[in-house]
Image (tube, rainbow, N blue to C red; front, side, top):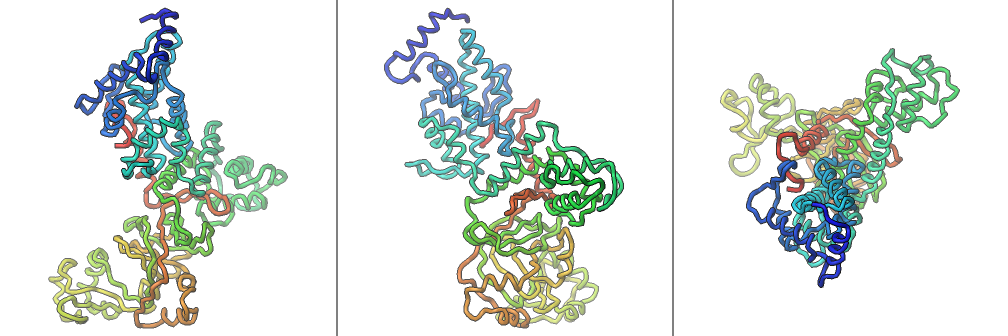
Length: 561
């Protein structure tokens, strides 16, 4: 419907001159009635011509019901400044490691252009589509707020709601203050590790927009001192990764020391053997496209958003993917050592707990899974194997400890579910727990411990345990943890470790233990580190993201449900 310019101006002036707020004006009233009609209907979805079916979650109904269905993102002049602020945030969501397609931009962009063209052409935009824009923007705000905060929405004054229930009052407060962008920025983590990784993501996205980094052609293994026509391409690739400074190897005619050191830096950052040789594995890592690294960083930013705002003044931090334990005090690493983690079949979980005590000269109590799958087949063939390998069966029948004689049991009738006691290994150098374990009670029965196989720490990829974490330097870690206890010097710790009697020592106060799975992070020296996805947890995140994307012939469910 075409409206004369004078009539349109009169309509706008009339809207501002009416008593009360602008929101009582005719255009907003029309949109309000459309919102009421759409949301008060009991149907779980909104159907509009030309738009995919929109599933309406309870949070949307609650938000609009509380404001009596007054639109949130428009007035009588069309979309408000706050609406355009939100659209800009959603468009830039990729710079935060989020997927903009999760926030209805495919539907919003054409509607917003149509709305703007209608105003320029002095054509009244259909109020039903205005209502749809309002709904989509509100739900996009909810979805983005949940994603960028990891679901941790801060409380609003006077509200006692928890978690995601705080979204509605949080949005109302942002709309009332006009601080849409600032309010969403406050939801984002402020941990230095998160911010540094986010900065690298933005750098790589800009690099990707210009075509990414070059691919180094395949060829023979390249060693220092050799000549090769691929060297200029290799140096260019190392420069884009930050491993080679501009013009650093300008005068090198062959594979010289500057290039070699840059390759070593690259290998160190990617968890490869640092030998300075351009072999198959190093070449494969060099030639991963920049878009793969962008996705990898995005998955790890998502992990950061699920972490607390602080890991504590002092903590033990294990990165499963890097096979490393760090002792951190006030953000600084004061001790670091390699670890062995679970196999891909028996994965080490990522979680947080409190380290409460140490146990010297521990027994190893064989878990039921290992008993069933590993030990019972051997025992049935040769019951004497138990005694020769320092195992004993502790009966759980009656009072007190009673050891059973394995030679007197009918092993043909014994299986894991009716095992007559607890299978354990005695303390000693043969014990897979080594001489000390570091206990932080948790539902996974996972802990840190010494090992009887120190040679495994020489491996580059250390995936050998049944889920627990073996540390390379248990004596150093024990000394650090017990340093504030009188009498627990190095000699006493060694004596306790080499004893054949189990001893429990409580810590003066619990220390947080955080077990992470970072495949991309920025280290304390500002270097971006990458590791292979040994447990396929990045792949699991990618599948979860794909399931959230709207499909051509299916109804997309709004984010935040």
